Length: 72
Image (cartoon, rainbow, N blue to C red):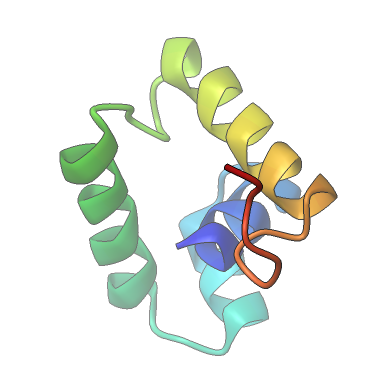
């Protein structure tokens, strides 16, 4: 999901371009975005929620999560 959000934000929230960059179908990207919305309560397509999700993606990348576990 992090890779999907990262590419989605990197290409200006265009699902078609994100799908091309991820080498998956557009339906896969939109399904993942729907799952993110269902699981987190934040909608990647909503400008009010976009900042929160983008900050979370950038934070995860900065911490190298999930490859490196977070300290307790």
